[in-house]
Image (tube, rainbow, N blue to C red; front, side, top):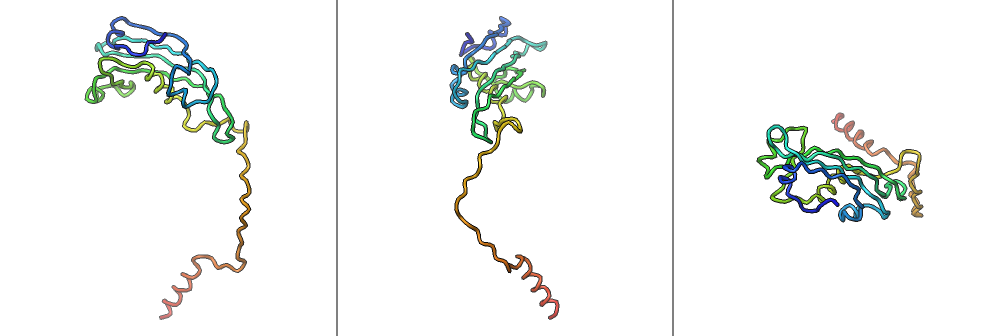
Length: 171
């Protein structure tokens, strides 16, 4: 089982590798966000040091969750895959020296791997969940019963200004 609290520096020294399935229900923030359904995510993480002896965490998280389609309000199964390439840093100052193609992961003495997995899942999920085009329709908007009367001899809104500019030119 994926441990919750770890020392990433010690795991890098051990070159630890985690590869396992984890239930979405074991990730409380994700479980609160998604709709019901016993789903699992595949987690693959490797801890190591690079050439400059910096701690690196690489891997991927993939799976599927049920979200509410924002078009039809039915459930839509949303598949995701999030590749990770992180460098462990202690503070913002160290974060500034991390290469652009690597994400800094600021941790103290210990790190919460479950929170890391949850954060990466949230990054992988769409901002707006919805079915593919043509798979669903938006529900019809109920008629409110309010009838808007249109004036037949209504003057365009800026027509009055046109008349005012003519009168000021004549003076």
